[in-house]
Image 1 (cartoon, rainbow, N blue to C red):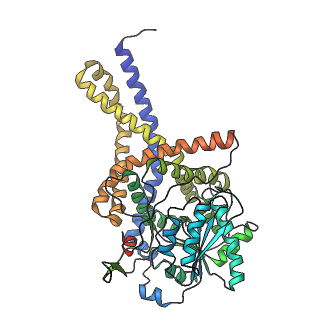
Image 2: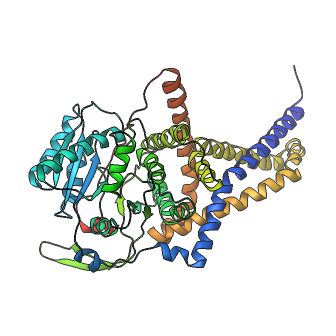
Image 3: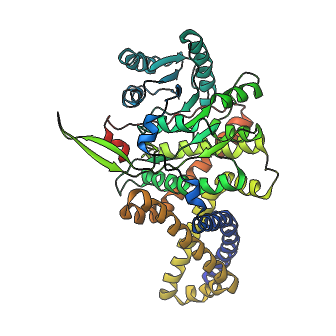
Length: 486
């Protein structure tokens, strides 16, 4: 069938208008929870409730108290490049803290690096070799670590009062363990902030983690804690009381973490609430001092007021980033929906939807970018061709103009919110760069959504393959105090 170019042009623009309406409405619906979080947070901040949620335990008070015995659990699969440096950097922070590193029988390289650290720090580092070849899941590895901790307690005649989660790329704040020790008498679970180290302005992939964690750990968690009582575990910089570990072990009939869960940290937060255990997200902003080495015998002592937090280098490679986020989508989106349902209250449903919308939000955003590119192209072509100018009048549809206006307002709000929190942690330059990184992040989310859908639908459901630990390569800064304040 043949038709003239004008008819084809009009038909193309009409199709674009229809897609604009569909995706414009979808973006508005997908943005409602963001607006809800923003409104609640700023109302809390204006009313002073955010200040009440923050802690001001001084460095002196933290160091003078009795330091409780803590077991630090570090699951490790193919972490031979970083695990030794991580242990040397962090295991010296407390004489009452023991690091238990979980490795796999088929990962000799990681085992050797842990043993090297254990030889230098025999009182603080223990290697745990699990019963299964890797990779399984972090949850499975953590269960093996907890079983070994029980054996260690019997042999050493000790009872750990706190169980801390960390990954092999973490740089732990020197006051983290004293902070956990101080709060374990009050809370069964404590989560402190997790931030990315400062990366260069041009590192777009790594920069998205800076922006997202700055906003999530300075805004979202306050709102979620206030409205639902659930504090999601970040998988690192998190501490469980002994009571919590024993309650979870009894509830799961011998295992603390669900061994098939890809996001064991997310899963366990809801289990704790159902068991009536108390949780808290703790942002401790009291000033503390850091000694910065300047040379062989010289040290500069500075006063810092950044929150006590764990810092790490998140992936800077695009492929590594979308693979990591795909694992998060699989665990939170697919496994979470199947195990946890959609909640019993409106606020629970809002947050479950917020957690799971990532399965489609990246795809919707990238399609919207494609449509916006087409709209700009039509405007340019309309200046060059009367044919495109006539067809482009369809873009003046009142409904479309309203949708466009609402979406622009929502986008501006999202960019401003991201800039505020990125600036608060990393300064104005990084805050300004967070705006273009929102767009870049959506492309990462687009790739991660496609990968998650492929793994879950094709490999897991159709071919019956188990969902396993998808390895992310890690890096860790060299040992020095400057890294903690970066």
